Length: 447
Image 1 (cartoon, rainbow, N blue to C red):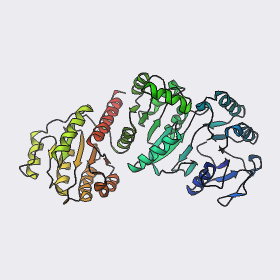
Image 2: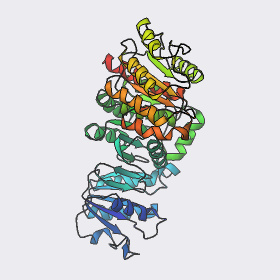
Image 3: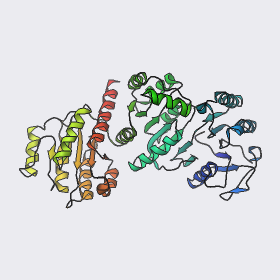
Image 4: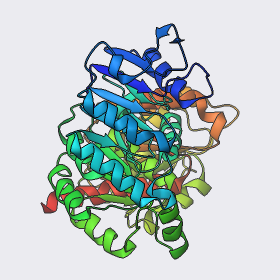
């Protein structure tokens, strides 16, 4: 399914507003190295590709058929695929158990099993494997990276792809499995275990039909690849909404939370936290402890950072006398040199570099959090370069930044990403991500 050499799109269209057009366009523009066969008796060509009237007359054996048809035409199409020896199918069509038609979904699943095929869906957005250049989906707003993403919801794929792109976080794969009538998240998770480009695994999971199997697979993976999950359903209202969305049962939120912890899965509560945790796992090594050293050029954000770290279960200890002495040799007498160390609004790129270097060489500090509120006379790009230089000298210690002021700091963000430094828009988001990094380090040491 995930490494096809031939793909048929059944329900192909020459109308750009239709999914049957978007899927073919994504396969072609994405550089799919195999062959694409559009299928639809109503059209002669789509995007300069010959369209075949049925799957039976496609001239080669088909590894993967993507079905984009009304639900009342899906069963006959599955029969045709089965008779032609198609190995795997993706049913993007909706209107099955998520809308209460469990009987039709059961018939679909039985047909798939009858022909020995495997099926992703129904009611799904397909998948993309960026490193292999296979965009078997109507979604393509993604670029290559380390994160493999599993989602019950196709729309959540689009949301996560957009947020990941904004955070500079690339994806190795995304898989939307919809109602999971056949292939479920536990099998996809198992596939990611051996998928070399996937170094972090994330999932949006509304309900898990085979939870024990999913957790068993996760326990095998989490010692080597972090698994981060966003699972809604904490409230009764959300659980009811989940049932109407994909036909899944949310299950007990507390039970899932405990099971996830035991399996080494990091559970997040919001979309922002999910992206932040995936980003920090992708860029930073596990810390030795929870002691955070904070550098700032303004007192207010520094105090917010201390508060945020305390709420997240992190420690911001006073710096040892030797480090304070080194700071005092660099900074004007008016600058506080406790934790956080305040460089003042005139903190230059060179000062940022020296202080960050000292912080990263201090054995009693396990993680660094560098804040900057850009002033009219400071270059955020130059400051970013200075911090990046210090981090490159100390890759073994986690270091994140919090460049406040949104668009004003945009020039510095590519510099940080190039140096493998995760930037956060608020001290609270930075502290929450650092806490997740520390909790994973604790879990790894307990194994």
